[in-house]
Amino acid sequence: MASPASIQHWDVDTELLIAGYGLAGACAAIEAHDLAPDARVLIVEKAPEAHAGGNSRVAGQSLLISHNAEALKHYQRAMSRSNPLPEDLLDWWSTEMVALEPWIRARAAEAGAQFIQGTGFSERDAVLEFPEFGARDAVAFTATILPIPSGVWLAFDANVARRPRIQRWFESPIVDLVQDPDTLAVLGAIVLREGRRCAVRAHRGVVLATGGFEANLDMQRNYCGYAEAWPLGTPHNTGDGIGLAQRAGASLWHMRNAGQSGGIWPGIKVPEFDTAFLRTFFWQSFSWLEIAADNQRFYNETAELQLTHYKEKLYGHWVDTPHHRAGPVHMLFDELTRRHNRLITTVMSWNPVVLNYEWSEDNQVEIERGWILRADSIEALAELMERDPVAVAHSVSEYNQACASGEDRRFGRRPDTLMPLAEPPYYAVRMAPAIVCTSGGARRNQYSQVLDQALRPIPGLYEAGELGSMISDLYQNGSYLTEAMISGRAAARHALR
Ligand SMILES: Cc1cc2nc3c(=O)[nH]c(=O)nc-3n(C[C@H](O)[C@H](O)[C@H](O)COP(=O)(O)OP(=O)(O)OC[C@H]3O[C@@H](n4cnc5c(N)ncnc54)[C@H](O)[C@@H]3O)c2cc1C
Image (cartoon, rainbow, N blue to C red; front, side, top):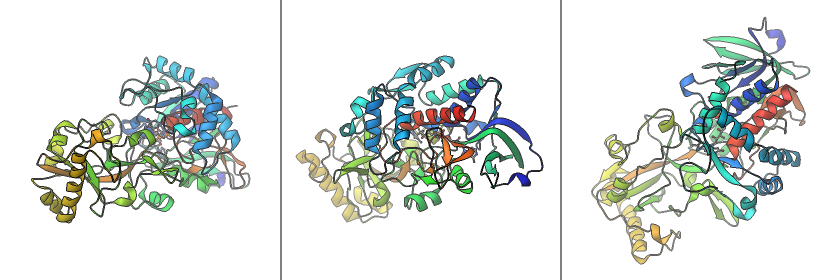
């Protein structure tokens, strides 16, 4: 934390300083611009312009639309049972959410983009994650903005660009806050710009919207206990806002929820890329399985786990599937599955969406690159994986027998997905635990004010989006992006009130 005494002069003056240009930062800026006719707004973003947009840009772009505040409040409360949320925050969430749809439609219209019902890449018009907690009444439908990918982000980015009093600096990370040591009031921040420390005076407040800590393995290990976890989104989300909030005296929350709220997904991590590819969840054939460190299958691979953010029910609780503790995990498949399925999804995640990596439709290029192993027999494939050939062959043969009998006694895989690994050559690819989001950060209230250790607001300091998200355990699809919208707007409203 820098004290005002350490600032010889302010390099720049603004009303609102927003750190991080994802959806939360964009929405805070749009709201501030539209509310206060003279307010200058400065967004500082760590990534270069071509790589800005954070996880918001590479998300599945699903938006939760609710028309029933009471039902949504009940649903959110039930999903947060393991770590209850303050009632005033639940009230805020549910009332803001039922008022949100027209505002999103207006942003899409302003950008000349189409708001649609559904995810845009599947047949479903609503993803209902935890029906027993009341999803049916809480979720009116899932919505998105076209095009796929990145449609929601592109529309909001266009909205920001249309507003002349919003200035954006790229390759300009926030590195410190300027805070009065007596009152704790945040007066501005230090931003690294073109190699120098730039003191920015923010008269109405600083909004931290720097996203999660998915790309910070040290934090993943210390806060979440994962030995290994790879981001599916931006490599720039390294939890910077957490350190800044801590230095300003914030109380932290949701650093490690009962489960990984966004789920631990089967990803593919290769040395040439910093982030993981996301395995597809739409299959044309099912001649594939996964094995854990002990060379055995360990879960129901073809359950539609993307619909519950990779949670399965155990002892009556929704818990993460075990990819993060079963490793090393390999997926094994045969020639039929190789031919008919591109292994990764292209509609979301960093590598295909931002870096434009075009994974070949039949996976041939990736086999040639050595990312996927190939052999003529399961035993030879096991040697390539550095596993016990007898044990691996036994697991495959046990699975093939289950296919022949039409019943998977061990994990209850659906009969129509019991397809044997029968057509050589055979393939293997290592599955890496991959995550879409973290929700830890500073504790905040319904005005997005950051709270100190005594739960008092720190004057002039706000936080929005995934950093310090209200999600305290289970997560309903489409809530992160909409929370980014309403928490960003709330911060701007309060700061400029
Ligand atoms: C593959 C994937 C699929 C997802 N699908 C969905 C979905 O369908 N629906 C949904 O609701 N949610 C989804 N999510 C989650 C959702 O994308 C995020 O929770 C949401 O985008 C967070 O928005 P944000 O603005 O808080 O952060 P981000 O959009 O991540 O933006 C944070 C920004 O801060 C910048 N930054 C970091 N540090 C600094 C610093 N020191 N100074 C300045 N800038 C900094 C980063 O570069 C980044 O641009 C998905 C996420 C992923 C990765």
